[in-house]
Structures are given as C-alpha cells and as structure tokens.
Length: 554
Image 1 (tube, rainbow, N blue to C red):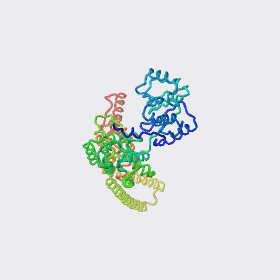
Image 2: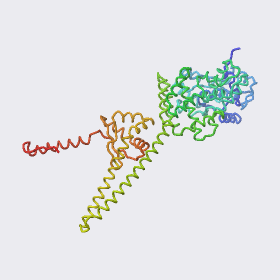
Image 3: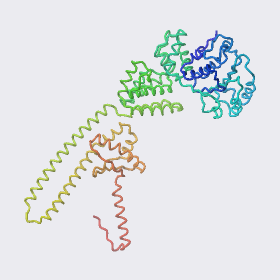
Image 4: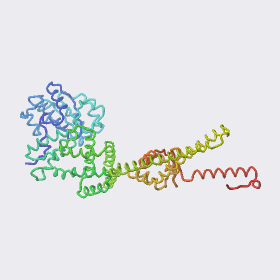
C-alpha cells in the first residue's frame, strides 16, 4: 500500500476534528442545524490552518443522506463516496492552474445542471486570488445569483487581492493561526495513533516552528519520524530543522551584556561550521530575546510556552538587562533578519549586527570603574573648593585689616567706591581662577572622556573627535568652547549636535556640570580680528594717503 503523508492521512472528516477554529466551526454547525445555508462563502487565512479541510467537511455535511447535518455520519453512500473521491457533486478547482476566463465560462455552463447524487452541488475554488480580472468578472453574475442547488466556497491566503465586488457577495470567515497549545495537543494525539514516542520538548519545538500551521507541524513530525530513533528527541528535531540549541542563545545574550564581541564571533563561527540555517537562526534569536522581554515586563508564563526549568534559567539572564536594551536589540536583529534574506554575504551581516549589540552598553566592570572614578573626582573637586574657600576668606580678612590701618580722614565716598571696585575685581579674579581650574581638569581628563564615549558605542563621534583633534579651548561662566582642526562646517555641526553626550561624559568623568556652548576651528577668532585690523589700515591709507600714514606694531 502506498504511504500517505500524515497531513493527508489525518485530514479532518468531521467538524470535531478541525483544530483551533472553534468560532468558525460553531457558526457553520449552527447554519447546518437551522438550514440557513448561504450561497457563497469566503474562507481566508494563512496556509495550513484548515480552510480547504473545513470546506470539504461542510460540503460533506450538506450532502450527507441524514443531512444537512452538523455531524455527517460517515457511513452513508454519499459520505463513503466523498471519502473515496468518487462523489460527483463536490467539485474542487485549483484557481492557480485554472485561472483564465475560459475555465470560468466552463464552470458557468455546468453550474446550471442539478446535482446527480447529493442535495447540493458544491464548488470549492482554492487560491481564488489567482484568477485573472476577466475571470472574476465572468464569475461575478453567477456568484451573485447562483441556482438554488449550488454553493460556492472560495479559499484564499490573500483576500486583499480579491475585487471588492467579489468580497461583498460572500460570507467571509477568517481562519486564525492555530495556537501552540492546540498544535502540541494535536501532535500528541497523532503520535499516539501512529505509535510514535515523542519527547515533550520536541513536540513544543515542532509546534513553535510550524508558526500556527497544522499542515506544517504534521509535515515536520512526519520528517522527524524518519530518523529511526525509538524516541524522537529535542536534538533530533533541532537537526531536522537546522536550528541551534538554546545554550547558544544564552552564550550570545551573556556576551552581549558583557560587551564581549570575541565570544559572539566564536559562537557564530560554530553555527556556520555546523551548516545551520542562518535565517532560522536569526528568527530563533529574536524569539529568545522576545522571551526575555516578556519576563521583564512580567507577562503570564503561558505566553512564553517553555518548560518551567527553562523559564527559570531565562529569568536569571533577563535580570541582567533593562527593557530598553532588549527593545534596541530586537530592532537591530529585525533589520539584520531582513538583510540576511537577500544579501550574498549573510555571515558578515550577521556578525556586524551582533558585534553592534555588544556596543549598546559598556561592560559591567567598565561601568563600576567609571562610577568609582566619578566619586573620586567629585570628592577631589569638593576638597579643592573647600581649600579655595578658606584661601579666599584669609585674603578677605587681610584686606579688612589693611583698610583699618589706612588714614581715617580720607574721603569716605572715594573709599567706598575703591572698596567696591576692589571687591568686584576680586570676585572676577576668583571666578576666572575657578574657570581656569575647571578647564585644566577637563583637559587632563579629556582622553578619559573620549574613551568613555567610545566604550558606550559612540564610534562616529569619537572618530571625529580624534581625527579633527577636538580639544577643550575656553571656559567662561560654565560654558565650554571646544576647538577643532581642519573640520568642515558639516562635521562641526555634527559634533555640536552630540554636545549632550559630551556634557554627560564630562560630568561622569570629572564631576563637573558644563554646557558645551560651541565648537570652532582653532584660531578662527584671532584670524577674524587680524582681518578686521587689515581692513581698517587699508581704509585709513585710502583716506589719508600712503605717505602720511605710519603703521606701528604694538
């Protein structure tokens, strides 16, 4: 006897065997019970969700000798003829290979003939979206007013390609993806009937990779049964799928968090050496980080659909991450998944994306080092400020004693004015000194600031700072001016746009809160002043004559 694939052997023969489409089944069964049968139905949804199988069961229920019934008997002459494929009044038509207007004209001619064996003549048109526009137009009138004994069931995976005039004439049912739980239970039932022993983890892995399709899940189970193992294990299914074990994803997640690109590249080398499917690898990696995100936002465990021991292991890894970091990771992986499908060098694309992930956050050791450095710098600044304050108080006391020794007969008004002037000059001097000290501290720690930006993944910014020798130039009233060499205006504008990052890095490294006011080409101000002086001299010479004007350097 010829071997039948599992998805053909276990095709539903009644409504109770249809998996994961309870709302649709309920409506169809109620219509059969009440006798309110529509003339045209549209079954749409992704592949392998039971559209054509439901259409066949519905057609069988309409023509059962005990029907129309919601539970066809399966033993009457009509039911047996249907199961053998010899029932003449159920016509299945593949629109992908019969898509022209001539095929639809032929159908229109046959529609008027009454059923020869059953109660209804049922036309099941699969992949109906493949019909041409002319064929749709030819079908339109028949679909709108078919004979009383005719029922049309149109099936499609792409209802958006159907004309609105067709959609409006059909009773539409949307078939959803079958849940992982329903697929897993169905696989267990089929395995029992087939005498197969399948590990629970293997069943869940098959269910997950079938992506909501019953047909795909049965095809994978059929494939796994060919391994010859007494028990179909998780490892067997991984090998068949070309997928990798979860430990690989755990290694990547830890390496990303630690900022270890070397470990990530080692893992990728192993994946390529084993000849794994790269597209599936990226999808599974996204699924892994998606589970970490669900754990962080405390979703119900059933949404993760993994064994308890694996969930506990994932919780430990998830605790090392923030939600924002995982969202960034998923964005980068999503872009990589799209590019890997079409590129000629998928390995380079994947490696670049994963190395980029390691640069999203600095390693924990680096963070601790900078936190410690920040504390030390702040403490140092506090000590410097205290010492400066004491010094300023001593200066002020000496000034007061000096004033007491001066001639009391001196004009009081002049004394007060002089005192105010001296006080103002003293404050300006103190401010200038503080600004100079702050500028010197930033200059001393500038390389640490650049290194911090680099370790935080700001590679373009640090590259420009290094290439154009961007350095602290001037500090005035907490406003810092940076200078650069041989940079274009566009490059200067980019550095200015990143000033918040520079300010934050300076704060972390030095403990100083500054405002980066401007980034200028070094020596620009002096050049402008010289140009103005030259213009002034030229104008004076034109006015008084070259013989009269004498130019002296300061």
